[in-house]
Length: 107
Image: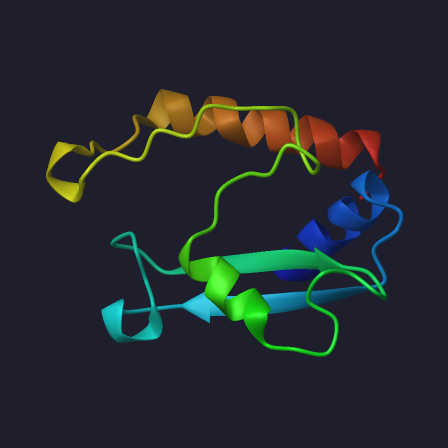
């Protein structure tokens, strides 16, 4: 259900989206780069750069936000030993931001 909700939000944010690639990474052998299960949800459109090939999976391995998809951001990825768990307050603030987006799109 969460994946479907995110897909709905992405279709609203990127109206050219006609399909999605959904990849679950659970374990290092599956390409997991951070120590928790996560799902990649990639909006796709007919004729995009990955049409008809599997190069999208190579991109997953080196993913970073792209300027053409989002506002420019600085993505600093710390080595695992320097990472820290987010606090409950930080997670609550993030959840509130996502909830506001979902409510604005009437999901």
